Length: 334
Image (cartoon, rainbow, N blue to C red; front, side):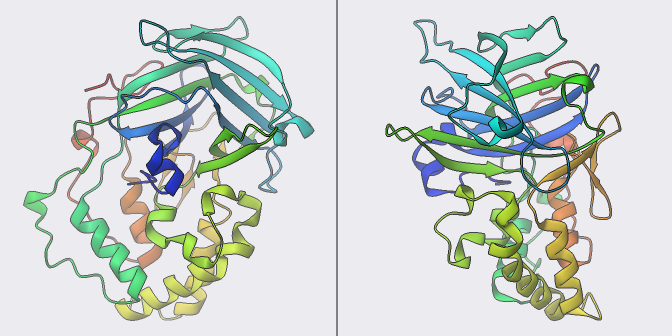
């Protein structure tokens, strides 16, 4: 429910549904994680889709570097071949550009290139954890501009909606010299071949819970997932500002609701994860630097929009499996 099944296309084909994106320091480089096909992870990757990590290197919310993964149809053993390309400059925004081949392999294998790029694509335990009662209370209050009603929440019965579930993940670990910037912005997309020479962007994800909390599709645009981060402030900024202002006003958590709504709008958008390469990641209410696998990103987002802490009674121990200390870092599938 971070972005689990947050667009009509993703609901129709969960292989295209990006549930979460993570960005953190690994053993030998920067780690990019795109989790797709949440809950079941039993359908693999779409062979007519592009799975892309977009990197903004100069702070303008436009990709300057893209790492793109394409998959072949599954073979008799159920595994899929894949290729990873690197696209820089103008090619980073062109889905018809071929880019430079970085690596190739099969799903479930760990691949390391001579340049030190590590790649994994396959099933893993879902590291995301969320209590359904709490998120429903916050989403309802944001939607209606009312107080957050947690009367139905019993911390002793807190439960992770995604306990014991798996994802199909793409994990890259990229040395700093192949990124070329000390600070980066990251978002991930899936795009499907339209069979007319073009591509339909069907899902995008960076910060957790953005579409779940704000239902940004109500802003009058066909699909938030089909747009780009550089458009976020113009398209959805006022919607978020108004919703947050109404929420903090109803809950009496800030003396200047409109000012706080504006400040929160500028935290949420553009919807890009920012990270200082080589540093420890952390996604919190007060400061954000990438996003690690274990932290409670939902609680951080709840506090950002409400200006008050909201506790779910969960920690990383309630997620599926235990993250590995080494590549690919995600836990084994349940």
